[in-house]
Image (tube, rainbow over all chains, first blue to last red):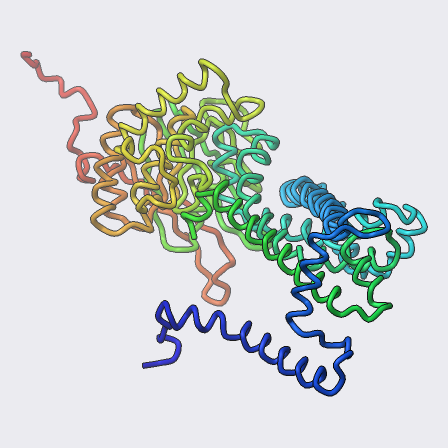
Length: 270
Length: 255
């Protein structure tokens, strides 16, 4: 039997899913053991038990100076920035993408411009953003928008162009105006694709958020990671990294479930 | 009195002529099949009827109205594929046949209830009332095409254009679609144009079969000339001519 036709059973499948995680964890534990055996006060690879203890402290105990549990405040600050940046980008993509895809005049005016914009490395304009928008929340949100909106707009407009012409003509023969075609034919069909693209752009969005927070911020997950780097507090950094990974994973999962619930027809077609 | 008039239609894409000197007069309620080899401009002619394209020369009028510049609600269309909206339920697909012409694309209150009730009647006529709440992707190809026809009719067009509507269906489904279309036509008596590859289908369903072909042919440059209507058959009575008397036989009839 060919390899492409062999599928794992349920048990083997679960084992295979777990395998890389277990391997990575095992490799880390062994490396950590070796270093700690040579030097018990080594800080580079703290033992998993140390990380767990640190995580418990970070999640539950308040900071002595500010009397706040910093991790939750960092999480809230970061998630607000990320949520604002991603949702504004998605809204821009829905509006501009549909307009570029549907209206030849707008396409002529904006398609090239957006394509050029999307070539600008967002981190290169970060200093400009800090200068123009200050070091506050705005510049961080704008960086996320600069980073992912052009990609989302291009993706949506391309998807709109891929809508079969027959379907648009059919709507025309039912008497639909351009607005009705945009709102009732094209946009609803774009939304599942948009959610899919947003899921893909969450990675870059986190990247830009953490970069902006690392450079100039007073709180936030990225800020904290780069702050404790000075003390070589690997246990804190690793806790934050794992926490960010969990958040990103949960957001992706939530968007996927949301899409499946809101757009059952898209599932039916697949 | 002709209802749809195509007068001296020329159409070319760039330097390449597709149609030449096409003239066609169709009476109201007539069913015209358009047949021809691939690349003979029959789909182009349908797009011109649909006003999706403008002819290079000549004009097409429906009921004497000025030539349309874009597709509108006086022309209904069913394509081979992509004719229904995948994001709407079967019932909504028929309802939008009426509501899309509203400014917001929706009806409200009593109007939407009435539209839903009319949609139910259309669905029952198309044999789709038992799947009204499903999405089109769950329907078979034949059901989707019935839905597309029902949706087009819900908008109450003056003419109905079918672009190889049964081309993607299996032979059995195609036969049942023929019966469906014939039934529908006896009920509503609409002017229909149908592009088809299938000569038999054309003669079976239509009153009239027009054939598109090239009258001039340059062996060194096959694209040098466009196609036109080369035959115009009377397809009533199974395509056998002279079955109905056209003139008064001057014989005293007792009836």
